[in-house]
Image 1 (tube, rainbow, N blue to C red):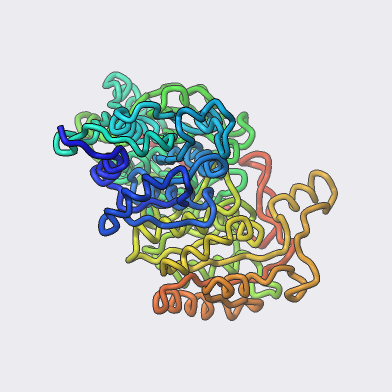
Image 2 (image 1 turned 45 degrees about the vertical axis):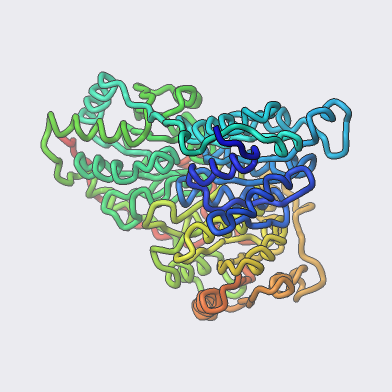
Length: 582
C-alpha cells in the first residue's frame, strides 16, 4: 500500500469528489492542508477570503449553483466559530457543504491551549455530522463519509476538525482503489403514489407547491413534465424559483405573507388540494395556519420523514426523493389516463395573474423600490443569476423580480444572515465564470461582509451589486412603526454622503472596484447597463447604489388574505366561474 501524508490523501479525495475550488483562510493549525493544496493549484483553486463567515457563504453559493458539495476551510479557534453562521445558513436551506477546521495537536486538547476550542460540539446543532479526527488512518474514510452524508437524503453541511499532528502524519492509502461512497435516493412507496394520483384526479382545483427539495433533487424537469401532463398549476416557494419558468402557462407565482405575488395568494386560497414537493411550510410562506389550510387538503412529499406533519397534518405523506416521486406520479398517470388539456382552473390562473398585480412604472423622486426592479428586469436577461439575502429589499425582490431558469435566483431563505449575498455571488461566479451574476443588496446588509469585495477584486471576479439604500434597518423599521408605534434604533444614516451616512461607492472604489450612485429613476437602466459593461470589460466588482424612498413599506400581512398594500396596485376582478375538472 502506498504511503502518503494525510493531507495529500485528503486533497486526492477532494479532487475525486469533484471539488475544483475551496474557500478559506490559512492559519497556523491548518497549514499542512494548505501545503498539500499548493501542489494541486492547477486543479483546485484556493480562494482566500477576508472572514471565515464569508468563506463559508462563498462555498454555499458555489454549492447552490453547481449542486455539488462546497468546501470551506479555516484554522482553529475563532476561525471555526466564525463559520457557525455560514453552517447555519447551509443547514437551514439543505445545502451540501463541508467545512474543515484545524485544531491544536491531540495532546493539547485538554490543556486549554491557544485557540483550542471544542468546535465539534459548538457546531453540532447546525450540521448533519461533526467529526474530530483523532487517528490519522481515519482521514480518508471520514472524508468519504462526510461527502456521502452531505449529499444523501436531505442535503446539508458537515464539519471536520483536524488536529495539527493528524494533518502531519503519514498513512497507508491508495487513491487508485478508493472512490466516492454511493448515495441512494429514496424511492416512493408505490401504494402512496397510487393514492396521491387518486386524490389529484378527484380534486377540482389542485395546485403544486414546489419547494427547495425540488432543486436539491434536480427535479425541475420532472416537475414540469408532471404538471403539464395533468395540467396542474405550480407555485414555487422562494427556494425553488426557476423550477418552472415565470412565463410558463402553469406558473402561479409565489405564495406568502411577505415575499408573494398578489395573484398567487388569490390562486392558493381558491385551491382545494395542494401537492407540496420538498417544501417546509415556513411561517413566512404560510402565515396564519387556519387561513392557509382551510378548505384544502395537502399531499406532502419530502425526503426527510420528520418534516411531514411538522407544520401541517397532510391527507397523505410520502417520504421520497422529489425527482423519483414526480417521475413515479407521471408514470402512473400515463398508465391510467390521457394527458389533460387546459381547463377552466388553468384558464383562471392566467386571468388572475393579469388581474392582480403591482404597479412598477413609478417615476417619483426619491426612487420607489418597484422602479428599481423594473429596471433590473429590463436590463438583465433570463440567464442572469441573482443572489439576495434578507431585508425589505429582498421582499421587494421577491414581489417584483422573476426567474426563468433553475438555480438562477438564490436566497438564504430560512436563516437569513445579513451579508450573505455578496460572498455567495462570488462563489456563484467562480463556479459559473461565463454567466452574469448580480447581488441585490441592502445598505445595511452590504456593511456586514463588505470586506469580501476585496476578494472579488483580487481574483478578478466580476459581479454586479445593486444596492437599495434607504439608510434604515428597513425590515425592522416597518414593524416598529406599525406594531410598536416607534422609530427607534433603526436609522443608520448620518451627516455624511448627502445625509445617507457611509459612502458605499467610495468604499468599493477603495478596494479597487467600481461604483456609481443613482438618484433619478430615468438614470437606472443606463447605469445598470454601464455596470454590466464595466464588470465584463474590467473583470471587477461593480456597485450601483440606488437612493430609494427612505420610508417606503413592503406589502405584507399576518395571513394570505390580509396583505396590506402600501403602493399602487392593479385590481381587475375577473368574472369567471370555476367548473369541475372532470
